[in-house]
Length: 445
Ligand SMILES: Nc1nc2c(ncn2[C@@H]2O[C@H](COP(=O)(O)OP(=O)(O)OP(=O)(O)O)[C@@H](O)[C@H]2O)c(=O)[nH]1
Ligand SMILES: [Mg+2]
Image (cartoon, rainbow, N blue to C red; front, side):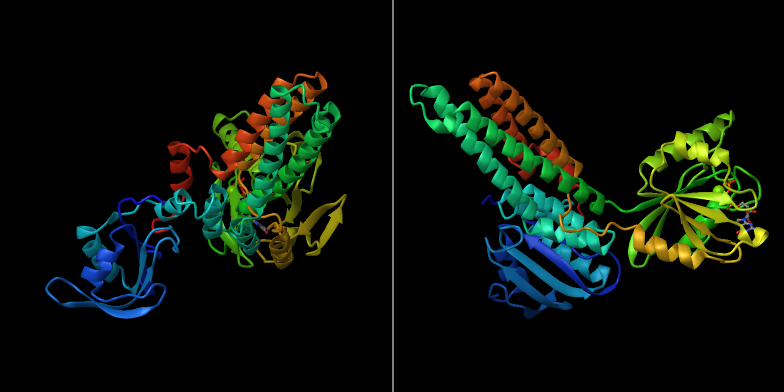
């Protein structure tokens, strides 16, 4: 365990609340308990104490808990002060601590210490951030699965297998006279192939883990003036986008954070798509295309009085939009029924944003379908995928070299495969990567 400077932070969100938590970690914790708290603390027991300033004036009546190293979140001595949740009181207590015993922590520094003190691996540290940032309950359940170490366990098993195979092959290179049957070309082939199969399966679950970890994004597109912004506002529940009868009102992509059936979702209202030579509109259309690429679902809005025509069909095909629903808006003008039907596996909704017709249908279906519900594989990140992909490439290379009876090269490819797997867990991690990962955390975590 490494002992470093003592750090302190307010771990609860800023603002007034019933209770707020101030956290301290490091070698000065015992000194803080003795001099500042002024009371003996039994580890892991909640103790009610009074916090006073130097002049002895009473500042707050709090609960304190001491976590003795290494049985703490960071692996160091830690202190948690549960004060009344007034930011002024909390800042005052924090200042008193930081004046003498500690410095303010950086974002994610408590978790970084947990990682550096081997309490958790890097995948688990990332899962803690995923848990805090989860935008829906499936994402938080998935983050918990990864935090429990399921994904790490799979990587560890792969590392063990790669190491065992490497050891066999290195032995065969160094002692060729020992013609052990374990090192036959066919056995190597089978072992590498089995690793490839396991890795490919893991990459699939990582893909799933990346999707569940992302905030679902619904991008609204369609021709000008069809009611895209009106639909965005309806889902948002307030006027987030300007609505006007002038075609081409929305020019940028407007991101709205919406809560749909207790899930946080991003709605992107766009300039839409259409054939034009106007340079500003062209820029808007480029932004629309980017928003289509990041969407988990596209809502293609049509003015029902004009109908879904060949141009709409062409725009969808040209932009390779696969996961989309059609929304026929303005049915108050056509008298169409506010129904939903499926045509060639695509949902078509008839609605009127102005008269609120069919909109509950659409909202209900969006709530049910816009959030991925397969949390079983845990959360994952692109970083994991990249390492697994390069590991897979090395294994395929190892297979080739094994077919060509180039054992030294097989050993080298397996070494590289091993390096990629270790990197996922945070082995040989450099400071830049640590900074990048932990700077995404909140202060006090
Ligand atoms: N009759 C009727 N008019 C509507 C409905 N929804 C929107 N509109 C009107 O259609 C016009 C365009 O609406 P917007 O929501 O600005 O359409 P848009 O697709 O965002 O338009 P651009 O941003 O210009 O591409 C406005 O005058 C709206 O009041 C509807 O359900 N029925
Ligand atoms: Mg608009």
